[in-house]
Image (cartoon, rainbow, N blue to C red; front, side, top):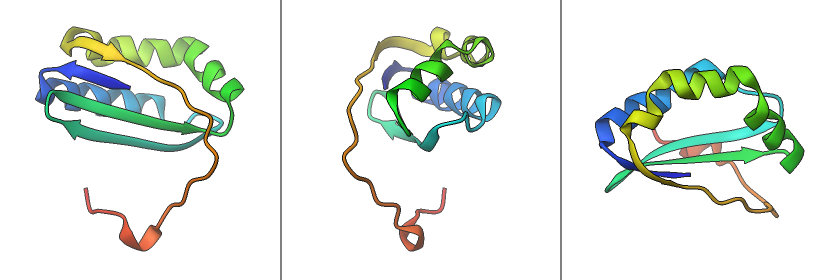
Length: 96
């Protein structure tokens, strides 16, 4: 998901939401990254059913609403893909 808006506000809101949501069943990887015009959020799910289950979870929705993401976002675009493969290089993880 790409969220365009005040970068600092989006960073804080996205990290608040991520902390409140935690790691729902089926979430393999979550990446929050800065973009020139906001923030990019990448969630890698075990399967589409787990993603939908998390998206429909009332506590997940409440965490997003309570984080301030909506207020900080001017535009938002989301795309879904079927993952064929991914690699986690543990020794190359940047220090955040």
